[in-house]
Amino acid sequence: MKTGPSWRPATSSIPTSPGVYRYRDESGRVLYVGKAKNLRSRLTSYFVEASKLAPRTAKMIATAVSVDWTLVSSELESLQLEYTWIKEFDPPFNVTFKDDKSYPYLAVTLGDEAPRAIITRNKRIKGARFFGPYPKAWAIREVLALAQRAFPIRTCKDSDYKRAMQTGRPCFASQIGKCAGPCSQRVTIAEHRKMVDAFVKFFSELGNNRKIVNQMRKKMEKAAADQDYETAAKYRDRFLAMEAVLEKTSVVLSDSLDADIFAIFSDELSAAISRFIVRGGAIRGASSWNLVKEVETTDAELLEAAIVRSYEADKPPAEILVSASVENSATVTQLLEEIRGGKVEISVPERGKRSALMETVVKNAKETLLANSMKRASDYISRSNALTDLAKYLDLPEIPLRIECYDVSHLSGTDVVASMVVFEDALPKKNHYRHFQVVDTTDDTASIHQVISRRAKYLLVNLDEDASEASKRFAYPPQLLLIDGGLPQVNAAKRAIGELGIKIPVAGIAKRLEEIWIPGEDYPRILPRNSEALFLLQRLRDEAHRFAITYQRSKRRKAIQSVLSEIPGLGEKRIQALIEVFGSVQSLKAASETEISQVEGMGPVLTQNLKEFLNNLEQNS
Figure 1 (tube, one colour):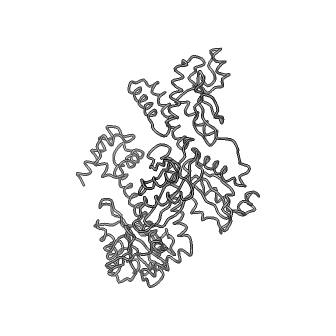
Figure 2: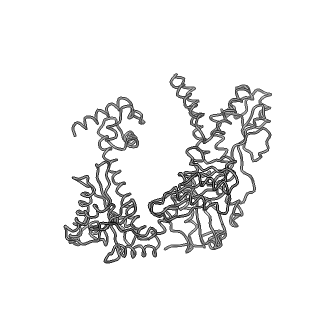
Figure 3: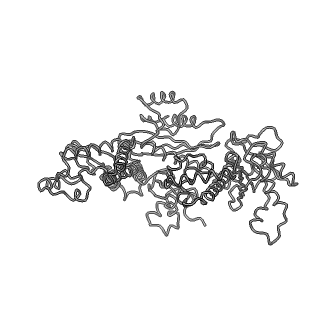
């Protein structure tokens, strides 16, 4: 039984990704902002009986009428977004978490004789270079600890530094290898300054290029080639530390960045656009909306419309990032510059921190589109309307409560397989799904005929009480057979059931314009673009395609594992590595020994044995 408020979203519609969520009241005011590593787990914990919640939480849930969420790519990003939204919306149920402190920064005191790296909220340190802001102090501590492995610069207090200078004894950080030791003259002040310069340069260029990291990797490789393994190990540790820093700081933006980020994710019928608002390097807001696509509408046109409409009342920032090129980009830029009264640049980020953040915005657009599709599917009225409209548009004799959809998939004419997915009452009936292996043909039309013939024979069998449950499920007659394809495939399916004397309505859906084909008709039927019936057919077709592709990939993986397991010395781990790189036996045959030897664990002898085995296999086949 469903517990919690009547407005709670379906559990299946809540993603399991990390994100930030907002509860709102009936006026749209934000009541509470929270973050979660797993949104589904966190949000469903609120939807229990009020007696099981803390009094303050129960009051918040009773006041709220909706909840929305925004996906993020990391815990750092969720901390930043949660913090900025609490500041922006001042939600009443977040009062105990309010914090008027500024963000902490990583600072390098370049004005000192031996500069040190410190964590501070004070941006007035004379001669210091600042990096950040970071959402939490612990986050920057992790980054600094990793960076010190690559750049062992000073972090000790000035008093500790002076004491070490006077006594000649290294401080504790120097003793454990976290500082190069300028205070005890383990390195000179000039040498330490070079490390500091490298540290500053690394953080200045963080996310924009990997030049310093690549230089360190080359030093490591050269030392290893010279058999100076002790030096190579030091370079290796520094190289890995740099990689870790890049990963940890991938979402920390320049505090001077003011930009709006737009991303689109679409299918043939609909699209979702997400917008992130970044001001002062922090994510200040996020929103998403769904659109119904018209025929031949492109993503570039939809992005253009979304950008123009976003600034009907507000001024645009100087920088607008988009996930794809915008239609009439020059004209849109000119319009926005007139609204702003200054220069505006529209661009597609290709690398660095902007690109990393764009991936998060695209992820939100994808989630918005998926949530909208699931909402349509789960809504009883929408499903009823879809089935009623489908019967009307296709002239069906009855409401198609059971629909079976078929798709044929192959790889360059080989490994032909087919799938059957079943929807009952416009919802997936996954325990009725079936796979088919297609033999003796690679033609799509012949494949459809074979699959439908095999499936239809079950409708002629009189199943007794001893028949298996699987056979009984397969014997249920559908009210509509849907084919992923055009008129040739539809006619083949109709011919297959006609040869067995079975009468079931057949239709096909062609992907280019979502045309609906009926056997014997020369022209397709075009359903309204925003009709629930068309959305239902699209979901059926996409599910059948997904199910067929999954089966085909599984077959290919098993086939290559079976072949490669016969080669002596080629264990499970190496087989998996080869599958990840090449994907099929055919690709392995075409690969050179040099290409194969680059796969982890593949030495020259094993590579040669593999090529000889594959060549013999081809000659004997």
